[in-house]
Image (cartoon, rainbow, N blue to C red; front, side):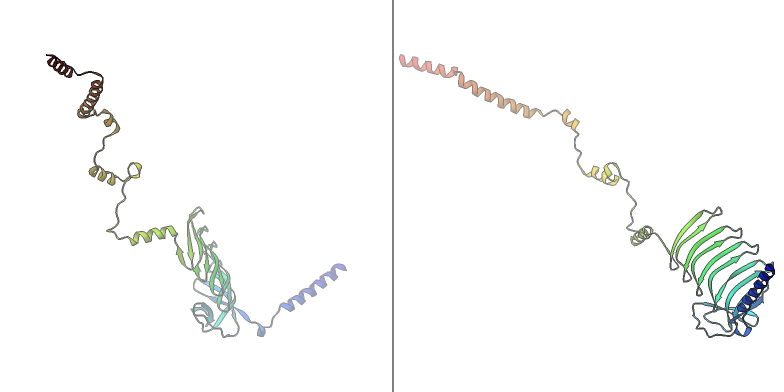
Length: 277
């Protein structure tokens, strides 16, 4: 009895919940549609009634008309897609999945290859790519990662090799690649100097002097004798003779003070003898 009572209560509860979820067709905001293309099939939702939306000239709108899904930039001419979006290959594999909000993409969108391998993951916000994204090759290996800001690359963009290692890193700002400052400055300096003024680099010799300067100084400057040559050179004989003469004359003067001159003595004696006679 207890089991029967429990099952009856559960049945009534499920009926109530289903009644709450049920929405009358007239009150539905969107309804499901299926569109067949030559190589894939689309299952999506669109607005039940055409609604006036101020279209932005920079955004691409997806809309439905005459059993076709159209994409137009800057406008639309039918009922815009609103809700989930799923497309399938002819082998029933997922091709693409995402979400529309009044005709423009939003949220996370994913793409697959026909064999079911993941192709790409992209984030959308109000019809523009915003946020991280990833690209994969048909073998399922990661090829590139980066970030978008308002449909433009912004931040680091990395590419990978077949082994999954980072092979290249580039930086972008609002869609433009940022180069290193040093490379830019070097490029500017080299570009500003005319080719006629550009001179080849001089090879430096000993003590940081260039070889050209050394050659010019050797040609123009006088050859200075080395210290050894100065020592080996004998002094000239002339200054020695002059110095010896000076020494002799000085010595003779000293001797003359202490010795009597014989000539003077002879003259004195002769004078005395003549006076006596």
